[in-house]
Length: 196
Image 1 (spheres, rainbow, N blue to C red):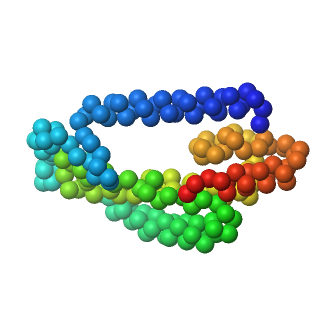
Image 2 (tube, one colour; image 1 turned 180 degrees about the vertical axis):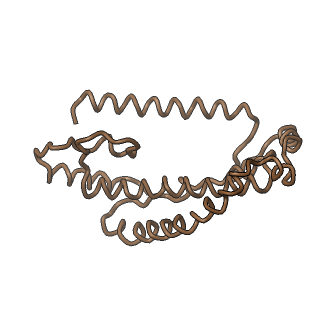
């Protein structure tokens, strides 16, 4: 990897850290605290949320009919999502120790804190829990596959693609065959040093 790319990756990391800090500052203004896995709002915020909640009956009357009709289709996706969850979790548990690759921490990807929002009714909370599971699972699976790709074939594609994972930027250039076995081994050694 040339120096300019290394410099740009460093700048990206710094900007991502700055963005996380700015978002955290904005969140602090909403007056909540995180205690373990639980989010606690100030009493005045809780009361304001309760006043803003749409009751289930009113929510059903105001929902778009097409949204209601597609709900069974959306929720039927839980079956393939659950199967994906079982498969990637089993794969990681059985193969990563053999490769000496740090396991992906599940808790880093599955966050269910929207149920603490008092302005959501029970149906909206269920929707949020389902979306948190689905998006968390896809991010979790992506990281497991990204670590596998880094272990076996850390080579960029010739064509640009949308939606690359965070590890992809540090992969080897397409067609750059110089010292490939040694550089592949360096990727593997670096992965062994990562913490789970």
